[in-house]
Structure formats: C-alpha cells, structure tokens
Length: 129
Ligand SMILES: [Zn+2]
Ligand SMILES: [Zn+2]
Image 1 (cartoon, rainbow, N blue to C red):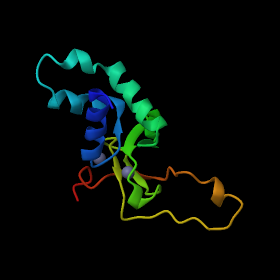
Image 2 (tube, rainbow, N blue to C red):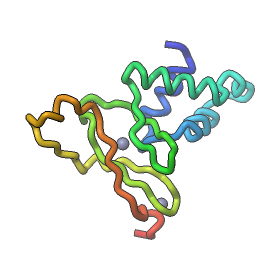
Image 3 (cartoon, helix red, strand yellow):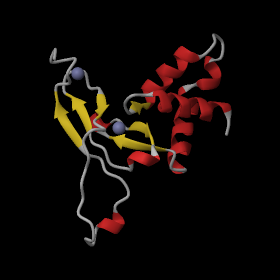
C-alpha cells in the first residue's frame, strides 16, 4: 500500500462517523507537516477512497444530501448499522447500538451485501440534549 492510501485508511479508522471526501481531505491536512499538502491533493485522496472501496476495506455508508460518506468496513460488526442524519448540521452519525434485522431464507437474503439505513432528525448536539 502506498503512503497516501495508508493515511486515508488511518483517517477512516480513527473516524467516529462516516466521512465525506472533503472531510477526509480536511482531516488529512491537519495531520500533515507543512509543505506536504501538494502530495495529498483532493484528487489523490479521492482516487484512494475509490481504490479502498473497490477492495472492500471501505464502503460508502451514506448518500445523505447527495454526498457519499465513507466508512471503514469493520468485520466484526457485520455490514449493517443504521446512520443518523442531522437536519441542522448535516453530520452523519453511526448508530452502532441499533441493528438492522432482515429475515433469513428469503429470496433476497443471498443478495444482501450491505445496507444504507438512515434516520433523519436533529442530533443531540443541535437539539441541546
Ligand atoms: Zn446536528
Ligand atoms: Zn457507520
């Protein structure tokens, strides 16, 4: 793996929620020594996100607002936890404590690869809870 690919993977590993391409770029910029920004331009980061997705290490777990948000695939938790999209701040949060249950042995169960389940509302920080 190349250095940018590892760095992108590391950002997603440390992320507490799915991140858009722009958010990954912003987080990478914070980590980098000055002068290295050119190597980590937006296109490079995007290419690496696509590459990581194609090998199954990363997936797009939300398309809220037409923006793809990337998340590390964590084997143990399986492929299906829902997400919460805040109407106010637009942040997409993971709801790992909730589970998506599908019926086994239906014609569709073999087809299921992942799920994009999304709750919408005001997140705790926006509603002051
Ligand atoms: Zn919010
Ligand atoms: Zn998630």
